[in-house]
Amino acid sequence: AQTVTQSQPEMSVQEAETVTLSCTYDTSESDYYLFWYKQPPSRQMILVIRQEAYKQQNATENRFSVNFQKAAKSFSLKISDSQLGDAAMYFCAYRSASVIGTPLVFGKGTRLSVIA
Amino acid sequence: DAGVIQSPRHEVTEMGQEVTLRCKPISGHDYLFWYRQTMMRGLELLIYFNNNVPIDDSGMPEDRFSAKMPNASFSTLKIQPSEPRDSAVYFCASSFRLNQPQHFGDGTRLSIL
Image (cartoon, rainbow over all chains, first blue to last red; front, top):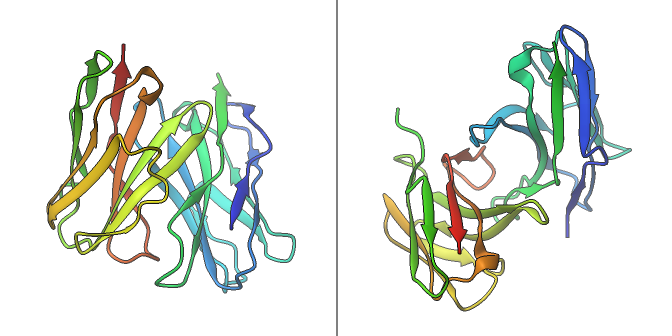
């Protein structure tokens, strides 16, 4: 079974600085998707960024980018120019690319605090 | 477009009572998922449906939990009888395909006293 591990329960960053959240996963599949979700205090689950395993190019969405290392099974999230609104729980998630594969498998999350 | 709609947003009830959580997925999405979130266990998938049919309910913790999807626009998650350890945030999510991004509702915070 696939597993997702986020080894940092909590992180903090100064406003305008850069922070990297770590995620590793375990799978025997070669084709899959990886996601980062943000959960602010409002409780919503917001998709931040998505990466297809067959793509070597790292995904980028504005201030959010990932460092995808397929061989190492690592998928870290970098937040540049951190803003107060970035404070939230961040969840890394894995999904098989197979149409009959397993749905999302989540890590336990990293709580990010942004210091003004 | 309306997102995934869950109701109620908060539910407080006494143990032993029946609890019903409701979800309306995004129109056109073939998949619907129920998750439970707790501090101890994080986000757990309870059950998911494809075209209103339950596909995998292996995450449902006990027989006290049941889920139905009578049509493409509505699903319920029931707990009967409820217990304090069922207290959690329950999320519903939907997706167009299994390998497409899931869109989450705002969750129901359930407190069993």
